[in-house]
Length: 169
Image (cartoon, rainbow, N blue to C red; front, top):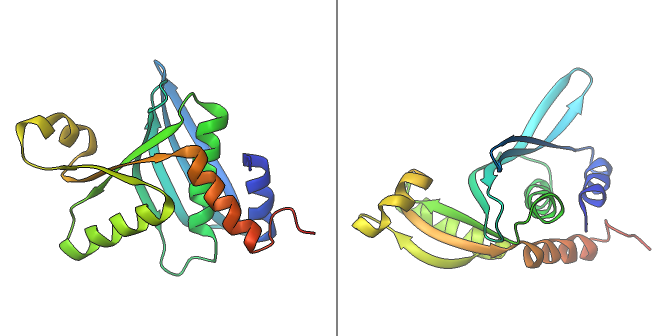
């Protein structure tokens, strides 16, 4: 599944995907949004922000926001677009993120959600001196996780195929 196929699916759901990228000295700072455009108004249902460095492990996911009342498949579209973009437009093959310790219950929900998407546990980032650099990069403590962009994208493609939305018979 590539970005164009994902966009066609989004179009079929009356949604639009926008990818914004700024480059500086090999660092790509990106924002991917899923929105709905009606007449002259735009409703952003979800977004993800992050950055890449030109390495296999260079996709760093920083901020994810999906509105509670968003249309079906907004989450899948954000994740699929992010992984497809990384594979098509960067050298990144793996993504990292930190499920920040906001509140006890919410942090556990985030970790479960990210595991469901396809991320795996790397380590708990806490108060130890060895975690200082990671805390500075991510802006806090939490559960550091890693995901294989290709595997996550294939998992999402299977889900959409199961729904018979991509490549319909």
